[in-house]
Length: 152
Image (cartoon, rainbow, N blue to C red; front, side, top):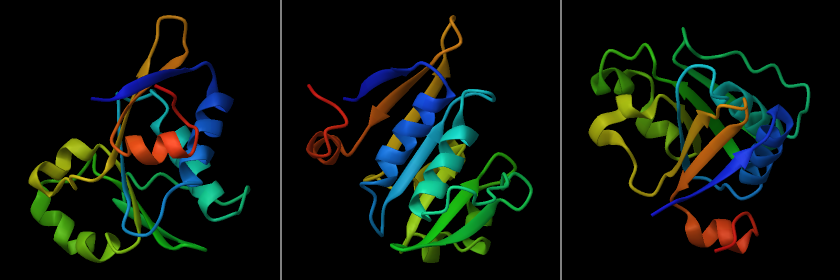
């Protein structure tokens, strides 16, 4: 069972993303779901900038390359955008298994199918009628509580 919170604006999404970046470690996978325009790219950009300790880091969407890799103090960080993935077989060619040794951020994770890591943090973003975003969080409950990200 997960929990959820409202992110009232883009800055709130970025702040939440930076908090998550503060608790990740090698071997972690973060799955980002939600419709186009829900804030996945905003989350990903802030997450990668925080993790790489570079606020002006250029973070292109990996929509066409499918994966973009960054060097962070914790090790390699791979940002996958699986929107255009034809199937899980293609993931092998993209270095999925090797990337899992580092930190992995995945947009459109439903394309992973049975390669979805069981221990992943799953964040589902949705747009609310007032334009704010809601993020539903599943996984890492103990770690998130320890970090003071969620109470309850």
